[in-house]
Image (tube, rainbow, N blue to C red):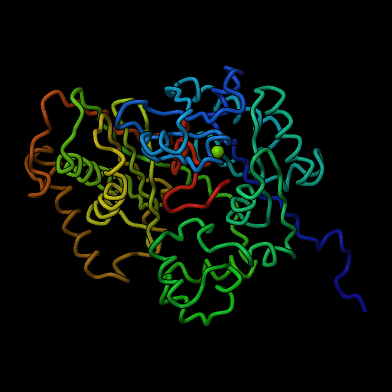
Length: 434
Ligand SMILES: [Mg+2]
């Protein structure tokens, strides 16, 4: 006997879409100069210390990836075409992409300069099922901007993002709810956003390399390998994750950045500056009664190449200590490719009201101590001005000629809170594109 009722009303719509432009910067350059068609093209600095900001698909087939030193890219493709980045141009096109999406879909969460999550469940009556909406969006972007994009769809944002990476280039892949686990099973655990090299290693030690294998091991083993994110990742592997778009409040971010007239080449100085910025951001958070889960580090090289790296915390926090740890570890990963720094920025994204979040102090007394200490420091700073009280590690004065941008409490709409500038290439810790 069929007890499920009307199939139309119980069917789950894979209406969370992830739209991602293909090799965004490189595709723009090829579009603007058709002679580059079919060639291994990269956008980035041509100098000895240049870094690849984006690579065309012909460059990728030669093994070239974004964030790779230009010298290595040259070795892989002696006929490499290097195009300097035109950030403002890319920004304008990015804004147009987002406009085209907003014409069709009301519920959009832009997560970087060239990608967004869309909840199209509400657009269904007007525009049809998710497949049709995905094709409509890709078609409009192609028609208006002559650029390729890919779309993944699912009942979960995490799976939609994995699907869009599998759809590339210039494709679409919508995963029906009932086939989610089957779709994920053969994929390596590294496609899960946030499962970095360390988590991959711990999983490999217990024989887990694919998402399917991850589903088979006992939860206790998974918790040992993945820590607090284990339940979330287990739900993903089972196909039961239903996380949709972020709440509006979570799109808020705040941060600070700084440009130097003379590039910083001393890693210790960069480290000092970014830890100072982390403290500053933590103070802004506490002043606004916010906590954050996502810490973003932005670095710009003298040639204009900009990278943005983010790290997600297990618990939301407003502790300068925690933010400092995160930015320093992000910096440690990038310092080999960013030998000179012209601009650095620290941003806290996905803000939540401090009162509404699980309080870190309940779980971590040490962090609680820091938060109390820091609240006291905030009060002292307000009374005596910002130079009167600083920790030893940040005491060194800013180098001459340093400019400091004012704190920017507005949501950064140019590149989303977690936005790396180009996200197609395999991120050191992220999903693997093609
Ligand atoms: Mg992209």
